Image (tube, rainbow, N blue to C red; front, side, top):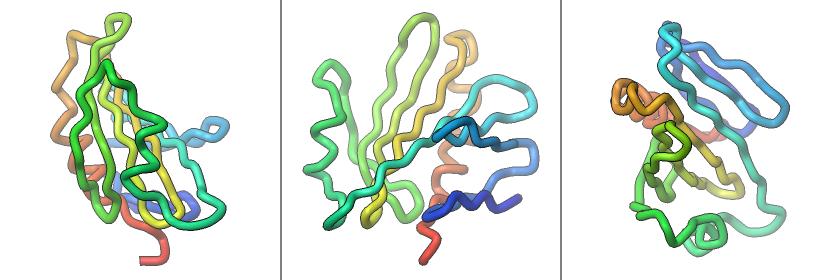
Length: 128
């Protein structure tokens, strides 16, 4: 396992997963190329993020469930779009909101779900 530090937050990556920065997004993929995790962040100027802040991001055409991943909490959903299986999370801790997606071809749906959940369960704020 390796530590991926991204400013205010970090997580643990299994050795078979790699991360790279593309513009304002961190892209994480495994060697078999099944799918990838993308993480972008939003910082709040005043106050902390809370559940009520997420309503501006979620759509009514998807079912959103409450979730905790590491030291973050938020919402998650799954959907199929343009031949891809997509999982989305809005995760917040303090003044930081992470938008996380995992996508793969529909034929590979579910193959990396356990690994992705394990990775996201290691999410921590850098100050913790």
